[in-house]
Length: 471
Image (cartoon, rainbow, N blue to C red; front, side):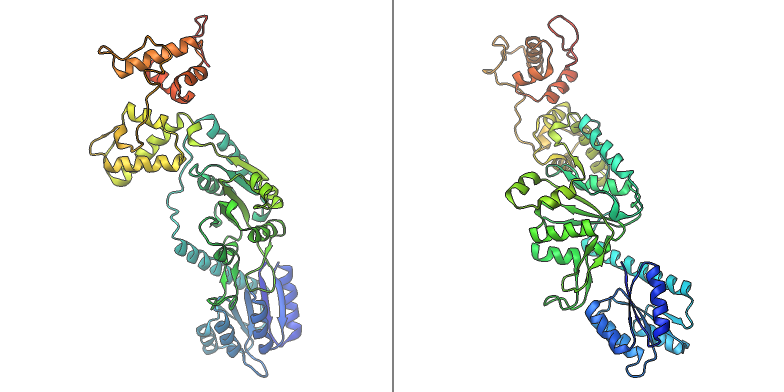
C-alpha cells in the first residue's frame, strides 16, 4: 500500500484530504508543520509527500530541500494557495515532481499522485533492467512432443488461465527439475500467458547472490541501514509490484530470509532493511529449484511451512534423457537458431551424429545440448555435422563382441557396423518376443535409443506369435 504524508498547517483541510485518499486506498499521515514533516520523512519514509509552501517557521521550500537531501527517491508534490510561475519553477528545480494550487480538486490531486507513482515505478524498472542487463528480446519456447513435456504444457496452460484480479492472490507455483531442464523458461512462459503479462517479471537468483546482499536486493533498504547505504533503495519486491517475482533456486535461500518470504506470501507485507514500518506488496510468487526440498525439510535446511506454501501448484520438469525423440527435435531447433545467429548457412546432422546425441546421458540437460550444438555450428567448416564435431567423447555403439547376446554374430570382413547392429537388434527382439524395453536392456541401451534405431533400420518388431509388436 502506498504511504502518503500530508504536510499542511491547515488542519481541517489536511484531514479532509487524508480521508479522501484513505478511501482511495492509500495509507495516509498528517503533519501540521514543516519541521514535523521532515521528521516524519526521516522516521517513516513515505512514498509520496503532499507539501504546502507556507508555514510560520520553516518554509516549504526549505523542507523540500531537506527531504530531498535525506532521500532523493521520495516523491514530493507541492500544494499552495499562493501559486505563481516563479514559485512553481523554484519548487520543481528543488526536486518537486508536480505543483498544484489550492483549492484542490480531489480528482486532479488523485491523478497527479497516480501519475507520479507510475513514473517512479517505471524509473525503478528501468534501473533494475539496466543493472541486471536482462535480455528480454527472445522469450524462448518450449520445444518437444514427448508425453512428459506435453504434461508440462498442460499444467502451464491450467495455471496460466487462473485470474483472480490481484497478483498477490494468484496461487504460488513450484517448478522442480534438474539443472538445465528449463525451469526459468517455464516460469517466464507462465507469466507471459497469464493476466500479468504486461506487468513486471523480476527474477531473484538465490544461488548467485551472497546471503549478506540477498535480503537487501530483495527487500530494499533505508538510508543509513548500513555503512554504504547513502540513500534509500527500493528492492525487487517493490519493483515487481503487480507482477511476478521469480525465486530461481529457492532451495539456496537462507533460513532467515525464508521466514521473510513466508511473511510476504501469507501477509503480503515486508519491511525494508533499516525500516521501522511494514510495506504492502501484491506480487505473484513462482519458485524453482533443482534440490530435493522434502529432504531439505527433514534435514532442517528448509522451512516446512514455506515448502507447503510454495507447492500449491507444482510442475516437475523431466530430464532430457527421459524425453526420447525430443532430443532430436531440440537439436534441430538449436541448429536452426545458431546457424541463423552466426550466419553460417544451413547445416545438418548426420545419422551417426543424431545417434550420438540419443546415446549421450545429458547430465546438463537442455542447456548442455544447446551448448553442444552451438559449438558444433561454430567449428563445422562444411554443411554437415558429424559426431566428431559434437565433442561428446567416445560413445559405444552397442554391446561389445564378447558381450554379444548371440555368439554367432561376429565382426568379419563381410559385415560393416550397421549390419552388425541390425543383426543384434533383430536377435534381441526375437529373443524378447518383440518387447522393446526388454530388448533394450539386453543390448545395454535405453528404450528410446533402441526405438530410434528400429525406425532408422526399418525393423518391424514382432511378438513370438508373429504379430507386430507395439511395446
